[in-house]
Amino acid sequence: MKSVHGLGVALALMTLPACSGVGGGGSGFGISNYTLIRARETSVGNGSLRVTPPREWNRQRGQLFVDIREVEDWTQNGPLLDGISFVTGLKSGDTLVRQTRRDDRQVPKFRSNMTAPEITAMLESLFRVRGGTVDFKTLGLAPRPFLGQAGFQFDYEHLDSDEVWRRGRAVGATVDGRLYLILLDAARAHYFDSTLPDFEAITFSARKVR
Amino acid sequence: MSCGQVSNGLDRRTLLAAGGVLAAAGATGVASARILPSAMVPLIGPGYRPVDADERGMWQQMTRVEEEIAGSNLVVQDPALASYMQGLIAKVGGPAAKDFRIYLVRIPDFNAVMFPTGFAVIFTGLLLRMRNEAQLTGVIAHEAAHFLRKHQIRQYRDTRTKSDVFAVLAMSAGIAGGAAGVNTGDLAQLGQLGTILSLLRYNRVLEAEADAMGVRLLAEAGYDPRAMAETWQQLIAEEKLSAKYRRKRRRRDISLFGTHPTPESRMADLRISAAEVTRPGVFYDARRASYLAAIGKIRPTLLDDQVKLNDPGASQYIVNNLAQDGWNGLLRFHEGEIWRLRNRAGDDVRAAQGYASAVLYPDAPADAWRWHGIMLSKAGRRTEARAALSRYLMMAPNAPDAAFVRQMLVS
Image 1 (cartoon, rainbow over the protein chains, first blue to last red):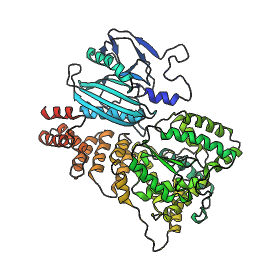
Image 2: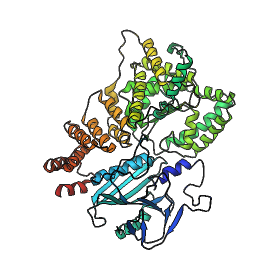
Image 3: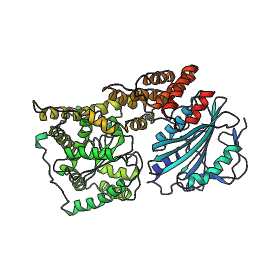
Image 4: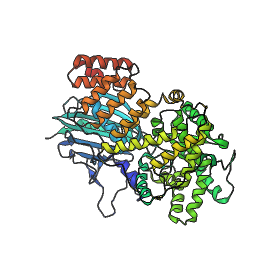
């Protein structure tokens, strides 16, 4: 989950002084950090989830040592402005990002017996620990079916250390002990509203394939 | 009390750096004389303005930085708290009492920094860690002393005369960045403002001066001057416990300049200085009640901001330290939160116990009832879970997760 805010922004801010091309396209070696996602059914994360976006999106390349196989990030206008992250079957005992045992501040581990409030608290800590979030407000937590299971919808907003308010929605469920989740996180001004319809369409289209 | 190592105040993370210096000083037998509080007279008067070109230039740039900070949405908007802190700096601000400005920023780290033009930035993480008004005022007095002793310009000149071209270059770059409004939460991490802060790190003598003068200002204002040494002690202990939980040693990287006093030696000097400025027969107060009255409303938020960082050693130290003044429902609740987030084998039981004991206190927050209910429900104790969750909904009928909790009640 490198996404805005998971990691995208944190990393972008860290590299800010070094390279001015924040969120910019290429790596400088002719290899793009993004690949095009067509508006048709596509498989995400580790391949266990398929979704159909209503228009084209950009997939961010996973970062070695940071991103895990089960997480994939998309963006429309760059990770500082908007992003959709997919969590595809996170195992019990794993975390949403790679981290070392010795980090002072850690993203909590997922456990298969977690209730929705525990999963959303784990997301909140992800933002605070890895995204530079200084203020985080839960706007809503309600039941919502996902992948045919009893899942949840989590709405929230957060103020980050770059002084931007961002807003997010996560829809998720634990299926066979593994966490499946789709999360939209975008600048509260304009970008959240403009990507929410895509997020909803993608979430409705999601199906588990194995 | 700032500047430990660094820049600004007692940055918890950089404090460590001093550990290495301790070892070095021990090995070479180098000891520096303690600076006497009585020798610390202010070098400026009321309404001070810069006199020479160097300083005028610095003030001009810092005015822009202050405008940026004042307009930042990281500044906590709480007029009552702001005026309380303004009142504290007025008490220990010596001749410049009326010239200081204080900004409280929402960053969960232990830090405070005085800028060269007399405005201070205090992090919310510092407020969380202070047990009483004397401790907070001690930090503020230390920061005020930097200004009263003209440390910023003295350090700047010192740096420049050493032809430390890099430092000077970095400084201008930093100020430009700060003025451009680039901020990130962890001010230490933050590229641009971070550069400014790193410029504001003082050498060992200046730090010792600020400590000595801070102790004196604190005692003169009627506070217990031992509060400053207590603050140091708390910081060192917090670092140790944080490192221990992650199964590592307290960090021992040598500081950039290698000239800073160690936390241990600073603490020792502060204790001696405190004894020196204490006058027999005078009653010195820690003023805990007025501190709690001022920060009580935001304390739940401060605890939340810290505990959710999932740094269990540091958080547990902070909770236990505050609980020295008495356990309550809020602290017990956060004790449960620490274990729930740490989430190792057996932590779920510890968390459940924390919530169960939190709800025994009359001041237990609504969230304590919610988590108590969730833990009971996971343990299969459905009737009790239902009662706890109902209590939560009664206390917080408009809670954002009410819809989810209601569903838990019916299922």
